[in-house]
Amino acid sequence: MTVTATSPTPQASLDKKIFLPTFVLVLIIGVLLVLNPEQAEQLLGNALRAVAGNFGWLYLVAGAASVCVLVWLAFSRYGRIVLGAPGEAPEFSTPSWLAMMFTAGIGIGVTNWAFVEPIYYYHTPPFGIETGTAQAAEWAHVYGQFHWSVIPWAVYALAGLPVAYSLHVRRQPFCRFSTASAGILSGKSGERIGVGIDIIVILAVIGGVSTSLGLGLPLVSALVARCFSVPDTLGLQLSVLAVWTAIFTTSVFLGLEKGIRVLADLNAVLAVGFLLFVLVAGPTLFILNISTNSLGLMLDNLLRMSFWTDPVTKSGFPEDWTVFYWGWWIAYAPMVGLFVGRISKGRTIREMIIGPVLWGSLGCMVFFAFAGGYSLHLELTGALDIFTLLDSAGIPTAVVAVVGSLPGGTLTLIVFTVLCIIFLATTLDSTAYVLASISTKNLGGDKQPARWNRFAWAFALAIIAVGLITAGGLRTVQTSTVIAALPLFPVLVILFLSLLKWLRRDFGVKLRPANYALQHLENGKTEVREV
Image 1 (cartoon, rainbow, N blue to C red):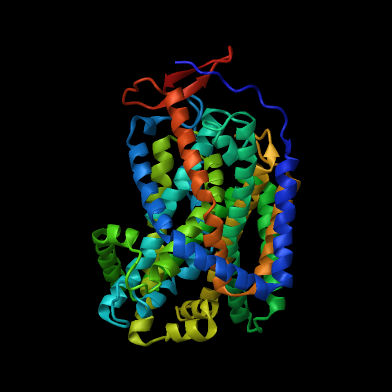
Image 2: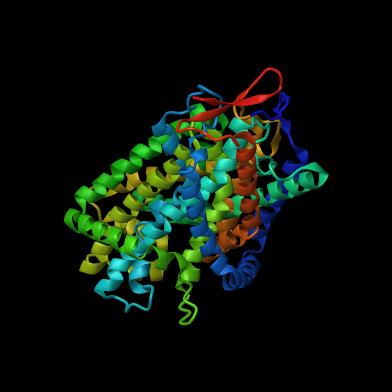
């Protein structure tokens, strides 16, 4: 079977119609957050109530639909298609590929929430369960693992597959959602829609990453203050921001192989070592027992948790937690999808689904199982009143207190601080890389955007961070995430339909049980080859 191949790609260059309006708009948003924090918080709060109240059901349905679609695609005949040329090996080793994928998709959020999220659930449990009971404690341990496992990674993989196919199979000269949508968007109208898609994607990426910035900077600042016994002031937060910006801009400047991959590998090693330390130094038997119990509880109630909207009681639990998280994952999907699509050359479609969904879910579940189990044990035994700390001083103070209760004192806090800084840096360097890729034209799958472009987006993200520090409040960053996700629903549908059309056009023949790749021929044609 033959199809028309794409023409040779010219030299990569800045796409001004994408870069200029989005970059200027992001800077304006950051400045407005700094100058008008109270008005911004009020405006975002009103928008959140409107979105969650009217579209919360849509977020839940979209999450479940992503899993169903990927299960079908992974085990269909298309699952054996190689995202690359015949005989092309994966660009990165499997451990490095998984490490870059995990750190880009999760970042500092998991270190922030894993210790405190179960405590919130214990005191405000779902399903009308009585606060402070044994049943509340069991559900408290399981719900964080549910929110951070299959659904987010399914959304990421669904967004990344069309990008990977566009770059590595179709050999399109752009690392963009608009290009990955070209299967069903064509002509002048398709081009105009594509520009709109790219602008929406950039703004959604900024909105999603804002949550990591808003959560991560206060946490790292509080950790530094505790380690060095200094006051946790705005000046300290800005100093931490300067150091952190230097780390991730250096990583972005060095590129994928020498910068982002190395930082991600280091991050993965530190994370595994820290979790093993929590398991061994903490209440090991309790953590193992409650983790086993939580796995069974989640598997037994997966459908109920996935579709629970609480329409009668209206406790607010689904809106405050599940809808927020699904919005966060959807807002993050463009960044993670573009990044994972870029680094997945040589993988099969099945690998690109199973890698994120299986290993990404497992990594998050272990983090919440060990860290959350340790926190719950402190709360249940009265060794540390974490909920009071959360209520009176906020998440950063509570996390510092929990980590500080581990053996090793200041040394443990320093190691955890380094882990948090690297987690945040790996997420943000991936983000800056993706934003620079979107604003570059003629960027093939084996090329990287200009260094100055990557650095410019790193600077813009730092400005957003300053704005969020000034505006303050977890609610503000949560709100920006849920709102940013809403315009992405039609974009993700377009992406998937584009992928399906390409698959049927390029691999419409009946495939035998083997892997297949699309070979580009010198005469401008392509053919399907068994590999």
